[in-house]
Image 1 (tube, each protein chain N blue to C red):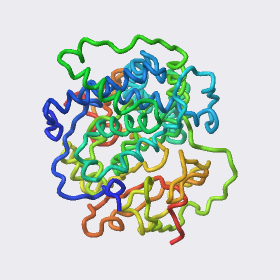
Image 2 (cartoon, each protein chain N blue to C red):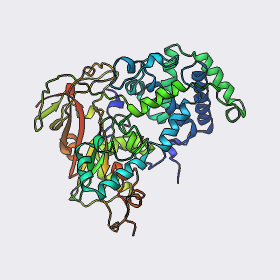
Image 3 (cartoon, chains in turn cyan, purple):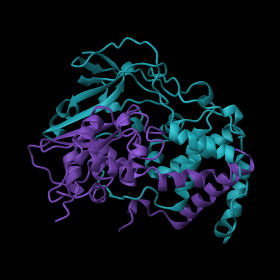
Image 4 (tube, rainbow over the protein chains, first blue to last red):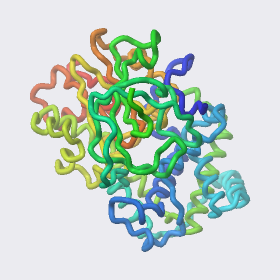
Length: 248
Length: 209
């Protein structure tokens, strides 16, 4: 069981810090921007996306597929104790730099060497980034931000369930990646909304995601999820892919 | 404002991350993966075009225009596509958005227990509290206790509806219009509406408070 898939309801966490900033230090903005750029230059946008992207005409040397699913899979693959030890964007930095090394765009040695260079006194503040304009790359990334990457697909799929149906969440052990919170496995709920078009996923997962399928908004009573630990007058809804559900 | 002391990492760790990110970005630029300006342009987009100021305008309009509010609740993306907001309101992390309305009977909160899914075009980028595993874990089971901690006390009879975002739909909240706002313009109303209120962890304050 991966704790990253199962954090709902963990006890003894103490008070929540109500930190309203998006980024708490400037370097976090940069790794965020890099992740967005990777998604905007992802090669799957050419072949499997709704808007009309033409990556082959963008002068980038990035020719991999990179999506939210890839980023999350990296975080879900961490040792669970590291998952909680590393701050949110530290996990992004680890996952993204690891990806560029694995895919052969950079080597660990050159990343380490350049990091050491910037660590030398004063270099961080004084050394500018390389001056390499390439407006066509920027335009593609901005186009991606404005047009997005909708996972809805116009294919004919017959939904298994209808509004009002009682369902049970399957007990499927996920492996590398899932979009099912673990605490919902085996629980019964009611279909509240059947979304009108099927949704695909970034890649296939061992627990059944991949091909376009119906998604439902499912309503769960809090007592079903938490028993006597549930608060009164509290209902939980989640959007779940059809592959996670069976008739109750 | 206090720093989250869970992030009181030693200065060396913070500087190391800064150096490593700078090294990574520098290498990516040198190798022609991104340009020297790509990251700045992305950040500028979220500073100037896509942020909670969009959501605040949408909420203020819903409060003053019942026809718009009905359209918004029925089909959020369609309703916000032609009200003078920036191009891209159905773009990345906003392709499929839904808004839920707070009433005297029902108070809505949005969470993402698996990660940090957030409606970028309407609310911009998620604040740290929303991404915090402590919030994600606790809000799932004890939203009322979490609200109390955030300074929101709701009547016992109010139902709390929790909306988790495990698929691709991005949720946000239409908060209740507070007392003492009669006759205010949409711009004046929008100035009261925070991203926290649009995720359900705060109420919109009455200006007379």
